[in-house]
Each structure stands twice: as C-alpha cells, then as structure tokens.
Image 1 (cartoon, helix red, strand yellow):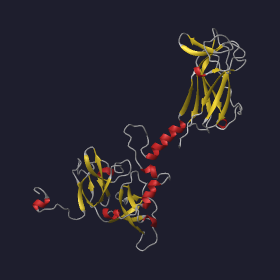
Image 2 (cartoon, helix red, strand yellow; image 1 turned 120 degrees about the horizontal axis):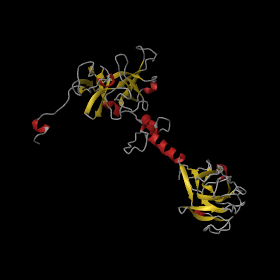
Image 3 (cartoon, helix red, strand yellow; image 1 turned 180 degrees about the vertical axis):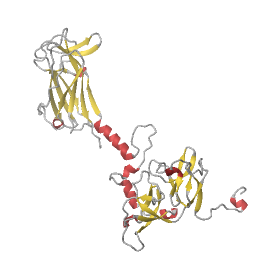
Image 4 (cartoon, one colour; image 1 turned 90 degrees about the horizontal axis):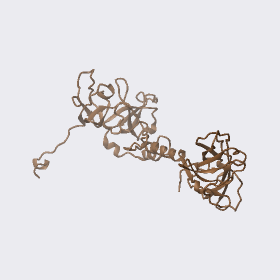
Length: 396
C-alpha cells in the first residue's frame, strides 16, 4: 500500500526504554524543577501537553488529568532562577519507562504492601526520596507502578524504619496484578473509600462537593433538613358542624371579608368565646416521625383604635391511622405562641410533639380558634395557615 511502512520496507520503532519529553516552564521549584530520579507526570494544560515533575497537592501535578510517564534519568530545571529556559518545551528531560526503583512510602510500610499498586504522593527533592502511597491516600490516585518488595534499612536487616519499597514501573507488570484489593476499596463503605474516590462532573455548579460521596451528602442533607410544607387554604376550614364558612356576619362565628379592598382574610369579631373552625390534613409519606409537626398561623389582631388584645390560638389535634377506631385518639394540640397587640402581620406557631404524630397513611384533624377570653376588645384577621414538617429519605 503506497505511503505506508510496508511500502517503504521501513518500520518505526523506539530503541531502549528511555524517551525524551518537553518540560513545563515554571518559576516554582515544584512545577519546573525535575530532579534526577524523580517521578515525572504529564498534565494537559491550556498550552498543550507539557511534562512536569511530580508536585504536592496544589502545585499542579496531583491533578485529575496527570499521567505517570516514568523516572527522570537526568535533572531538568526550567525555573527562572536557573536561567535554562523560559517557555514550555525549551528544555527536554529523558525519562526511563521501565525498571524497578526504590521509593519511600508516605506512612509505615508493611509486608502486605507487596503486590499492591503504588500511587504518587509527594515530589522528590534534593534530599527526600519520592513518596508513594496506597490507593485512596493521595488526592487523585496517580498510579506509578507495582510494589514488588519491602526493603529493610540495611541489607539483610530486620528494621524497616525508612519505609522503603521497591516499585516496578514497567507497564506490563501492572497487567498481572490482582485488583481484588483495589476493587474492595472502591466498593467499601468505609470513610474515604468507595464513593469518596469517584469524581463528579458538575458543569452547572449545583454542588460544592467534587466526589460522589460529597454530592450524596449534600443531596441527603437537603432532603432531611429542608423545610416541607402542607398548605391549608382558608377555604379548607369549616365550622365544626360542617357548615361552610361564607361572608362574615356576626360574632362568634368567623367569616370572610376583604380587608381594605385588598386582602382576603377570615375575621373573628370581638367575643368572649370566638367560634371554632375545623379541617383535616393527610400525613405525607415523607414525614419524619422523629421530628415535631408545626402548625403556622399568619394573622393579626385588628380594630379601629389602639390594639389591646394579644391572643393566642387554642389548637386541638386528633389523629387516626390505618387500623385505628373512630374517636380513639386523645387531643395532642398545643396552644400557639402569643400574638402581640399590634396591627401588623405576624406568624405564630403551635408545635405538636413528634411522639404524638403517626406516620402515613393517617389523617390529623385540627380545630382552632382565638383562645376564649383573649379577644374582648379587638377583632382578629386570619391570613393563612400551613403545616411545616421535616422530610425523611424514602426507601421504597
């Protein structure tokens, strides 16, 4: 075939195990200075693919796009202080792609390390060996080889305080590794394993977390901590005998008015015993029965002159769940917090304890009215009511 290797009787091949790579230009030692014997990685940057010496997290090489290339055969320093290069690619570094090299574990070495993959952890300096770690320790798990031996401090010795390991960087060696241990780490529920090792791409910026575990934590927190509401429209309230509430007529029966030709409200006129109203609410399946159940009342005392009444609301609550008998529950309602004597819209609450609220399917009947004896001078305008509850994560 014309133009191919076979047509010209030539075959392109590389001789030996050493390749040359362009060096990243940087004024920082961590990114622009590659020491002899240092692990070398390649990171794709805005200026293209450049080779840099391995750096600690935050210095550029412990990066999700980093790829291990091998071990530097020579020193290459592109920092400004060295004066040997100013642009990416001005320098090249020779990198050995195969071989077994001594590296130092970031923590105490163990005989069980043998046979496991090694991951780059810390940059080599003029006085410190390159550090490696096991899976899940470094930020991005840049694999650099297979641990084949734990090395004692002295030949034939029994002390291992230097935490030396011999690492085979030959790519072919990694193919034969038993990945069972690494797979177990990926499926483990232990802190720092499993979902904590899997990254999340979130181009829309919905989450602050960058791993599956962190994002699931955020979603779970939103589900169980966000307020959930059950709206109770004013029209859902009736008199206890079932009579539908209509236009306000006379105390003690409440009714609807348009306040100031604007707002729809339910009014109780001045009376020693304001009438009771009733409704019922279905318990939602996502209710967390370990959290309190809160009735919110939005309203204000109202009158033509200065306001003197500061009423509470009497709240009665009865619940029946599947299997329950008619009228078998006791009242677990709680008197609301007190409205102040002012013609301003206020929100008050009646908190019913979680211990008294059954889970779905069940229904709660609510009966409310301004507390007897607390509306002797003014009227009361009710603007709205709703239930607030805490959600739980549904499992079915």
